[in-house]
Image (tube, rainbow, N blue to C red; front, side, top):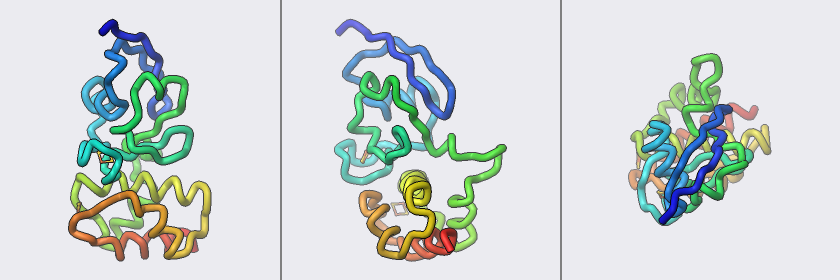
Length: 153
Ligand code: FES
Ligand code: FES
């Protein structure tokens, strides 16, 4: 298949890429741009491990073709750092003892940031709904929910 030339905006940086149009955004983020924070879990939109922001909306990057992400503003968990410091959501989750494994945590952080951007004072139910697409097989959600609700107070 002929490669497509795309310009991808990720974490504020423009990347010119020649890629197979069948490749997913997740694949390109991890293998071309070396951004390893979004993970491949289910590869079918069910687990949230690959969540990134596309124009401020959380999306499963395993279901987005990289060619379709061109022209949109993509933010990965790496792009949430502020002046080299963890994002307040990351700090709050750490402070509440809610850090989980490297597979599910980045996606949960991205979904939580998207929620707080749209709804700065979420209820527990709002947070649970926002991270409903982020599966943790260990079901350790409570401390994360508390951390995000606390942050909005
Ligand atoms: S790897 Fe994308 S939703 Fe599971
Ligand atoms: S702690 Fe990551 S899947 Fe449970």
